[in-house]
Length: 276
Image (cartoon, rainbow, N blue to C red; front, side, top):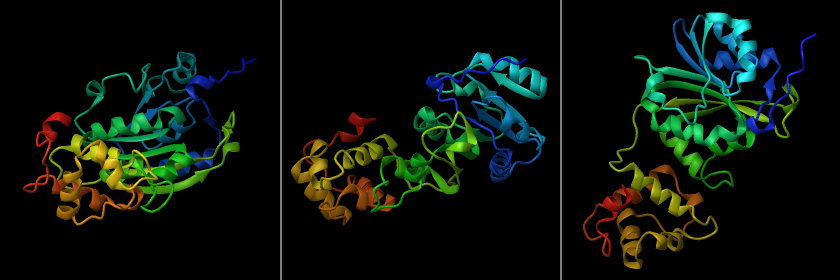
């Protein structure tokens, strides 16, 4: 008799058990023969099996060594299995010459740090189809003037075309999580806004959202002098009496570019160097 596998709560193990959902996920990945795929946390391999049907190269990153015998017995040398924590390893040694597709049921707790790491290596990825907590998916696709809109929304939509796939109910997992999940599709954008110093740009965004209830004028005092704030408002054409959630990506880009106009920065003209 096969012993019962004990799921580790600390690893966020909620294994999908519905094969129809798996097929829908793989369909959204638009896989072609010889595509290179990363699967993060394959679990017992329900998604892995469907990926292999597409004749693509499947690279599985799994931190729980108790699953290795299960995966090796099921797939043998059909997959490349890496006993690695995807957040801790250097990704460079796993990058092939062609671009990668990520198809995965991500553990909830690694979603944001994982996606931010994808952003840092975005040139290596072609398409990302991941199942994540529904609440996070709602934040990623959120639009301005909504409660879910924030830094995560801006960052993901800055670098990716974001599409919400479908909702996955909690009872379709073993063990069932306390919340529903959702599948999202991220396709890297080809043409990004011209931002010479992305560290500075994202510091502006982060400062703007420092206190969602406050006007931009108040939040920007943590980064700029009062006179600089007046100058930024005049140069950008953006009213800083607004709150961060009211601004679009284009608005934040305008604020960033306004810093480089004559006489905008008064008290700390070396801001760019200090934030790099």
